[in-house]
Length: 289
Ligand code: RET
Image 1 (cartoon, rainbow, N blue to C red):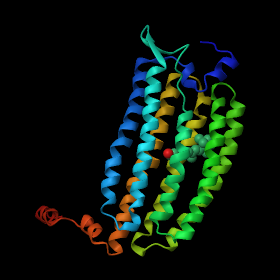
Image 2: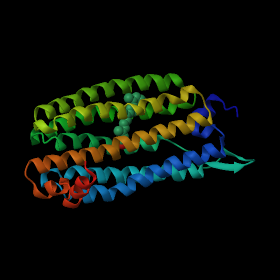
Image 3: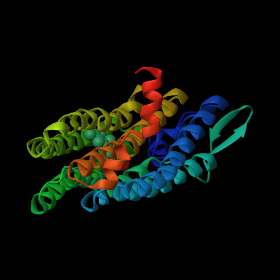
Image 4: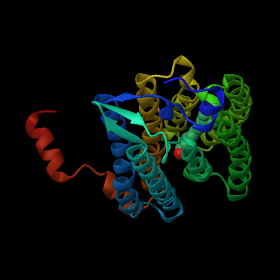
């Protein structure tokens, strides 16, 4: 399908330019469905796990539950738009000429809510002092929002205006670098402030942060590899792996960390939650481990 430059610019994302095989279409549906399903299901996990924590840390998984609800709704919307944007004829899925178009721009809108929350969880979990916490949350949120909004503007170039995609991609990356420096500041404060037995956690969370947040710019740049079904599906897959890693698994890691901190600080329900059960240790000794 040959589309003029203007026609391409009008449809926003490459999903609307590419005919998909039924395998590609179904894989795309499945990726989005698994993503929103996982986010919704983990609302329960985060709310329940907050009950085991010392009061000062309970807000950490509660914030994860909010992120799960917000991202789950956004991904559900992506899923239903995906389903509405193609027509099945002649054994392939073709983007509709009129009517619904698919867009990834909703994701960027959603990050505007979730990213500042995800960042604020860090200094709370690491028990930084309250004034320091407020200052650092703000200093991380400013470059993060500028990164997202410049990226949102740039991603509209992906259907043909690659100079727009790349120029705004570079500007967005500069804000990302600024954000990384701010996050590093929080991690260094966390290492200085950490109980010795937990000092590996902030160090590992730092590498985890870089590896998982770094997936988003790759997904952003991907349309330059070509407008075809594989790129469309691989990009949705990258977004989903990134979403589940930066929100869900990240939330689980922070919840386990604050559970250990709660126990170390003498909060009995947290210590009990971490205790190996008497039955568990009997089974272990019977097995000889
Ligand atoms: C963009 C544009 C291209 C350059 C860079 C980007 C970075 C995006 C990131 C997004 C993180 C989102 C998260 C969402 C969780 O809900 C905007 C794609 C560097 C890092 C963590």
